[in-house]
Image (tube, rainbow, N blue to C red; front, side):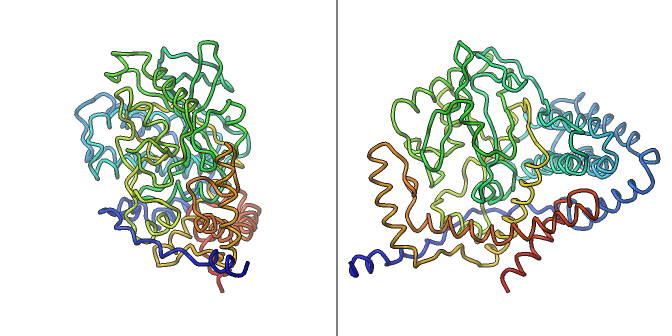
Length: 481
């Protein structure tokens, strides 16, 4: 027994240092979003709240934003990515976000403009080169920046100011459909969501364009209107879930996306989205497809969540993810490699939001879940700053023998068609690293939530994201002393 214990205690070799990607992470400071901007917006919020909404410039700025959007929409095919009006959009949406956060009665007007901005910008991007760095930067700055402004408004507004489900564009589709919580979904629609685990935040944030989504699923609706969801779970691989099972998993946000009806492939075959969903459903039921920890989107023998959707549409001639996710920061890439990732240019859930081939049909954001999402982001962002500075994820080596026994037991259960404590395709060491990540996250979360509650009592609203980051850094520094 001592010999077996000794053998089980032998650690794996060091994690291979990933070669990484030749690129540079997006830096807000280089695109008009440095600390001085956040400070100016916070000061603007306080000033508007003190002076009163009647004295604000909300109406004039909404009018200016409308004029810019109308001008851009009237010139399809002529607006280039360096058009000065796109920079004006970012400035106006940022200023309006600060003013409307102080005047929540205008929240619906602001959210409507944000929805229109997203549609206009995505329409313009259909003619841009999505492989261009300047295009990626511009789309991220505008669309993620607008999302950030909207969410600061939602967090500053009293509960119930806006409905939790906000409509987007009801893109036409001839695929079978069903009504779900007031939103009509069609077969072939895509569901973007965010889970509540630290690993979910890591998936969303650990790349060159940090986002808010960690999971992709594909909707199937049969002729009787029964909704199924095809998705890939770390624990089980590709599965077919009922709508109830899908919604029962913790979600901090949810977005419905749909391919544009004017795509040439859909004009030729209007039922293409339904056919893609049928293909994915048959494939998931025909044989077991394990989860792909390597994030290799070209080899479909194992599939991660984004790959379920991409493979289905790829088989029907539509290439989703015109902009790929990349991780070029060496320290962050090293962390991802320690969790089994080998491909650092891949399909990231958050980047699907920017794909010009897709319309946003609806989005669900509840205030309490949204705040948890922001807290998780702040904690993981600070942890990734540590990764960039050379910190390791680490794991408890004393637990390695037990973890390897659990892995052996899990492998036996997989043969029997069941799920064990260590997921298929995940090593015992990686499982311990996941536990280490959860532990590091938990060390910060409790104290950070106390600071958030104190801030809310004092200021009357949740802290803006840049304040959350400051608080998370302070807490993590204190816990490491």
